[in-house]
Amino acid sequence: MKSLLRFFLPFVLLAAAVRADADEIIALARSYLGSETALNAVTAVSYKGTLVSSSTGADGEARTTTATIEIFFAEPFYQRIRITSPERVETTALDDYEAWQRIENPANAEQWRMTLLDTVQIRRLRANTWENLSFFKDIERIGGEVEDLGRVEVDGQRLHKLAFDHGYGIIFYRFFDPVTGRLVFSETDTDARIIESGVNLIDGVRFPDRVTTVSTRADGTEQRVQVDFETIEVNPAVNRAEFRVPTITRN
Image 1 (spheres, rainbow, N blue to C red):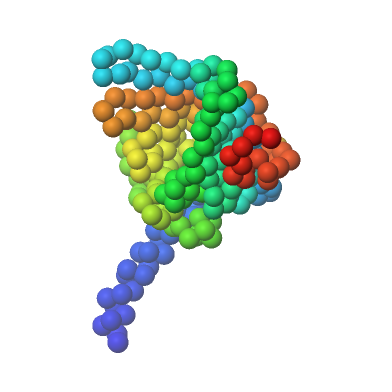
Image 2 (tube, rainbow, N blue to C red):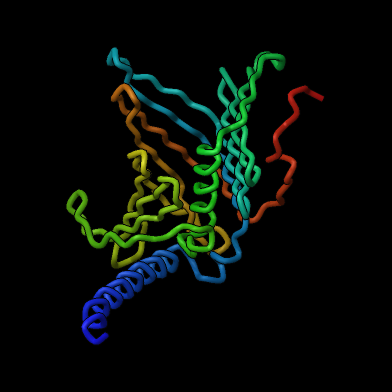
């Protein structure tokens, strides 16, 4: 028994130390964003702004699309994103365990199509909703876990890397400044990089003014999506009907 204890005890102590490091970074990151009282009070967030998507095609030609965007997150798992451009209106919504997408022609109300999203897409939307409302805290409550990947050097910066694993291969890698707790950037399991910039202080919580996502398409070309927020509202009224799967006929 003593031999077994000598063998297992170092690993138990190491696991406890790693968990403690992750908890410390999460606590620091939360304190950078706001007080525990302010963060815990957030149950819904609404964003409105402008989206600019730019990419370079295989022919080398640059393409840019500009649209307005409305984003709504609400606990526990409600999400609605509406992107409006002159060519189309695209609405994607999550209603707990159901999700859908509707694409409409703004010039002709009779031209539209709706798709029910599959299990994989629903899981990603649920993970994304949690990430936007939890402020890094208690992923274990939804069946996920945090892995401490330690200090890494990225572009000359020493950062602390944590993996927020939601299961099913859905992972958000967060890179924090180990001194201030500021989230420097994030990466997803699909190799997209997300950078939040600027500060918009609302109800005692720091929100970004801009979110930029850079990803690589299947054909190897790069796509950059930049969203600039014009208004952010904390705890707006939540109308559950806006998240439900719509009927296939218009009223």
